[in-house]
Length: 115
Length: 111
Image (cartoon, rainbow over all chains, first blue to last red; front, side, top):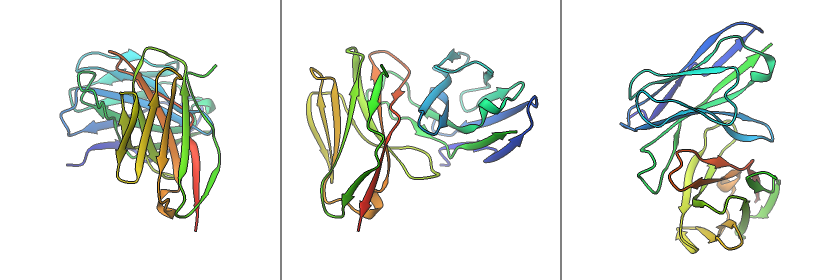
């Protein structure tokens, strides 16, 4: 099993450009998440999907959109990139709230720079 | 006030000693508590979770939870250089899909 995979690993964008970050998991998990991680800020939740067909905003959703394409895939789109969106983006998945241990498994991350 | 607070460190501990990492949280409805380890340039990985007051041991790691004081800690016994990483505390409230993370404590084990 590959676990959680993300593409691309690195990306440089110019201000105003758009891009989609892809995430897929092969663990048959119900829930998927997108986080960004900035120095001194910890992991902050952008959007999450509790199940196929549902998405909800997290702590920092502005400037992002998401799509839960199917149970395996959850994409994050930047419509008009801004320098403030320079960050490391992590996708994660978990079985969901019914499991008390609630482990979230993280992908390897995408390092995005917006110039 | 941040929902989950950790001392950012760096925390330096001699090899073989006990490393003690602390985390406080503000939401009294918090139910589950997690410690993730993150090596530089890598993704977080879960090392411990706890949801009952008291101690939970797993090998060299012990998680301690005190809900009355809204405090959770992680002890690492016989610290090894491979334990050098950033440790993230995360908290979940009952029925909530979301985890709230602290900013992490950077731990350095000195050989």
